[in-house]
Image 1 (cartoon, rainbow, N blue to C red):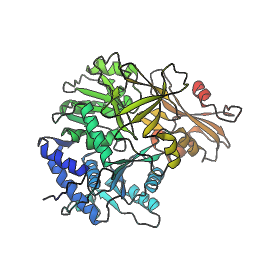
Image 2: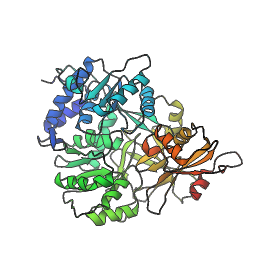
Image 3: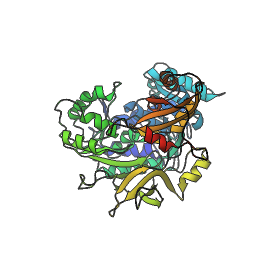
Image 4: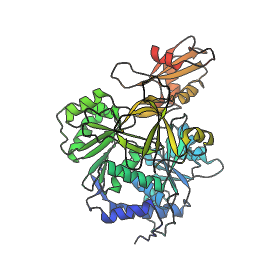
Length: 506
């Protein structure tokens, strides 16, 4: 029997969900189903097993697991004991993972069997003089999750809404990766706001195909669908989406998916899939992470008869707005109006993008109170409880938000926000590079943005050598696919690189 007390936050809420949700609601993947009732039993035992190894309130735990029912159980077990879940990107390098684990002060790591060696390397790098335990999903022995789940449930700690529960990694609106904390109260508020905006019910079947280190990928199943007692279907395929898209569409039809979320590049790929698969159960398709192009909207709607609705959010604020407009063809470009208690305002700025355009500021019950250990950045990014997003936007007379550009340097590529400074610093570590600037370019009018590096050589080096060099240091989505050598970078009289000029000539 699971012993509880009423001061726990997210775990307490999940117990309530399990009590009211139909037995047919829960998580599905690869034909296997677990009800919410079964999940809370697993979570209670895993929480006890982790606690027996010294993991407790305030301990950050780095996680290398694909988005799946296993990740759901791990994250909620950490919530239950007051520890802090920090999902890492599965394509991140050892250096990137170690840097994040050190910055967060990780107390342990949890990894899938195929990433266990990386987990041990990161634990060694980040631990310093401390020994960080590494728990393995699918492994054997005392440090396997299977062994931990055999523990008897314990009395769980008393928590309140201010307890940190989740660390997400974000380039935010201000540069290099930062740790974004979210409390139990913030996560619960987001789940309720999002579920209400999407009108989720226990009858919904939600498709989750995004990585678990993305806020939308993790919280779509772990908080949003769960809050409504809906079922989440997890999709994972190692193949590029263009090769897996027919199987994915078949899964959408077979599982009778009613709600799905993805980034625009994914919808573009699905719209071009061969065959005649229909999705009659689908009632809501939403997009986030990057701006949606009209051509993608039109292709997807023509192919499947479903309009893509844009949402807006960020790692810092989580879900902010949802486009539920009745006249969606007219308002397709809007990211909607603020949802729930979310608020937005425009800070006037001379952007050159027309009247009414300025920097978008947001505020809600889910907004982080600030980046971990980044006092200087926090001072410039947060004002009186408002986040300065770095997005340039305008509002129409009915309060619909339209994103029209960026005020900061971040480059959006396939839903990832890339900080060019991080890539440039990695390039300049190569002995053949004197200077480098990275910009976003489109090689064709309707193509996805790509990264291009302009490089001033110090010694002889080829584009292929630089790309191989970067792949050893950066995630694959951060590595430029185009490299152009030049004699000098264009600079202002003050010595500042003129990035806009490079973007124009790219």
